[in-house]
Image 1: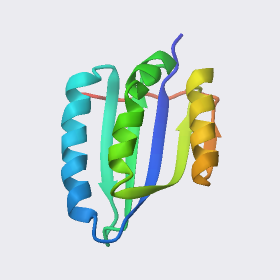
Image 2 (image 1 turned 120 degrees about the vertical axis):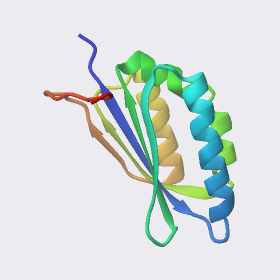
Image 3 (image 1 turned 180 degrees about the vertical axis):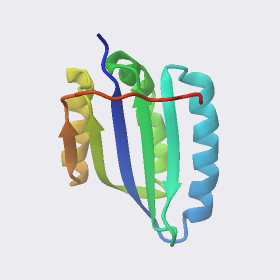
Image 4 (image 1 turned 90 degrees about the horizontal axis):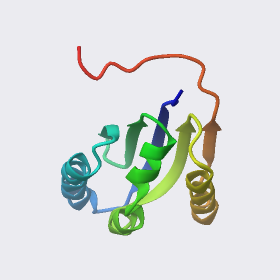
Length: 128
């Protein structure tokens, strides 16, 4: 049985870059919705003072996560103009390739990576 994966990424917004980040965030969300149909959930959140942003992704399985990350280096390059990584969390078990790439990126950025690989139980309601 395929097990879901949640990927959460946290970023510090660069000074005087908030408005550009907001534009990029909206454009990225629209693009991902159109181009990544297996990404079940993609949400962006900004804190009260506009200095921290969090992205939440939900994938049905590791293959869907792999497909989401195709082209991610291009998206990341654009995003790094506006923000710096501050940490990543993975709930569920991604593919070895994805996990390796994220570990390398976290080490390179000097940010923590939290991994909770064992899915126990739960559900996601995408429609009420």
